[in-house]
Image (tube, rainbow, N blue to C red; front, side, top):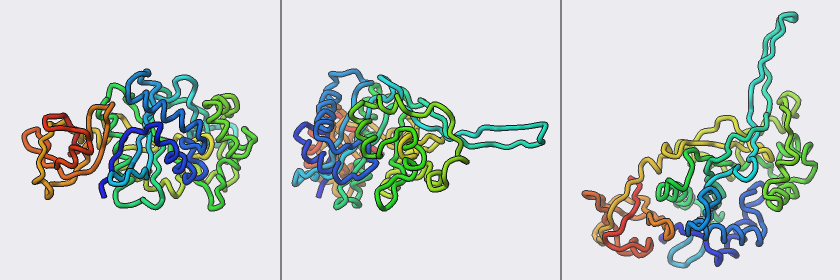
Length: 336
């Protein structure tokens, strides 16, 4: 069964809410709130239409089964973060100390509040319905975000970041939250998560700690999960790393999950993506399966399909052309 990634619309609200319910704790970019998700879909429609500034855009992508129309996954791309207000993270840093009198020289590790990601674009909200994981669905959905960036590079920043969900135990508790952040925000994780959404991040700006937190003063159960990924996010981290993203010491203020970064034009899918002219050809079933996209962002679509590239032309089946809304002679993006 063919799968396609397309822009989210306001008609996707129920499906998006169902995915949010399945996401579990810590998936803060996909809150279980109909009003918030409805606003997100409306913002996405405006983003694809280009009726808002690029830095304010937030694109929501839906993965659906083309035969049934069932939505089975979601992902997103934000034009820029940390613009209206700071986008705080903790950075794990080393603080050197020396005493001639005592004859000692050593280093402390500490968490320091930073706003290093301001202005960067963000890929996130990657979630596939548990019953539809595997079979390349997650890979297609993840890569669709980079095809979107490749389709309109001028809408996105030179630096791309992604925040991965931190470690939660089997009871749904975050050791980092309990051992570190809760001491400053003094709320249950779920309530603090709700406040972030309700206040558009102002809650974090108001109460986040401004002084270094020495790791040696943090209980081991919380210290040991700094930079660790939720079990459901391990595959996402591997996919990000395969695209060229790496962790440089930034972690989420709430759950301690890692923030990974990559220069936009060094992302593997973007580097390998080439514009071609469509040639409709039903005799290419044996051609290699490639990632293909409609490069008109307002009609953006992505799928996997057999493609034969010859002299700048991408020969694709008629069914693929229909799925992507393309005709012979149209422009298409192909990941080589």
